[in-house]
Image (spheres, rainbow, N blue to C red):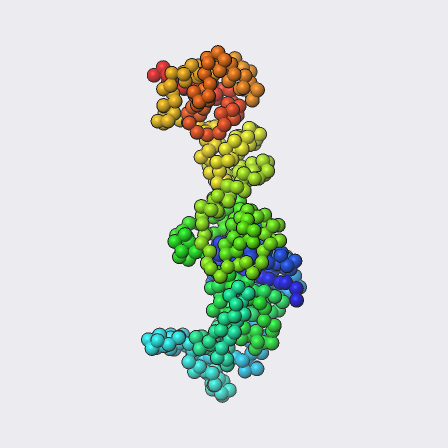
Length: 484
């Protein structure tokens, strides 16, 4: 059987890192086996599902680089790929289960079921259905329906144990007395998750169900239905959950968790893709920086851990910084440009008119960036000059050699037509030769003179990327400081 895996999100909002990691493992497994990656939209939660939310899923997946072989908008021979478009199929199989005695109509009200549940919990028993409607006669069913009572449909559990074979966790033996007969269709006719997912996986020829271990308790119910409907049972692989730094379940209180929030903060999709792959999976050669192609080549379920993964935000930032520094220069500038505008450092018109200059400015601070959104903090050195000098800058301005360097630098810049790399080096050499000042007293004086700071881009970048008028304006401020 060819490898066919699926990612089946509910359209209730943006993807978060948990389901993005699930999608990633499915995507990589399909790629490693030259199989198919199917996207299926599980929208049976009619109140929370919407087309707007579905669009968010497509947007997040495309940004991360997950391209599905079959699914909504793409099509495929096993569609439709939206559950709300498959209700006729679900009704057909529900009727078949009723006809063959694998399911029955249940007329118990919510209130009755809640009382049963409370009684079971009070007595220390699992809150399972009592089976009150299990053996109703056709006459009793007809009377209840004539009274206008809409039944749910329950699956009849006739086994004491269900053995689940899991590719990550091995064989697990579940006792059915923990859940009993369960609902597969609600009184309003809406089918429930555990029922529809079995039909969809079977009819779409899904070979491997790779999903979070929060679904593990659903698996025995699904195995029973696969068997009852005569379907082949796919291989299951339940991947461990993702924890926050405090080892509790990852949530918003730990930081951003939705894919769009990572994008807005300036993470690169390549970096997040790489990092998510390392959550409960490891490369046999212990490499941490792996391209999409490398991950697809080496990924295997055998190297997925049973242990939960801890989401390390600092490690992701570190990895993102590596990816930023490895970008092609033009690609880097295109990606960072929106963040420059968003930071308010300058506007898009200035960038368009001075594209090469701003690009070189951005490249001069690239090594400082862990996130693209950091760009404003580092780039403002080219667009702002401090009104007052901090303690470190004031210390350098107090050196007796600093006014000598600043005054000669100002004179030489005034005489020059423009300041390019060659001219800047000529000026520096002239100061060294005539004033006998070099090393730290020379270069720190120039740095503070041009930026008002003791840290920042290389000094030659500052000198050559600022307008000549701006350089003179800044040096005049320092000269005024000396006068004061």
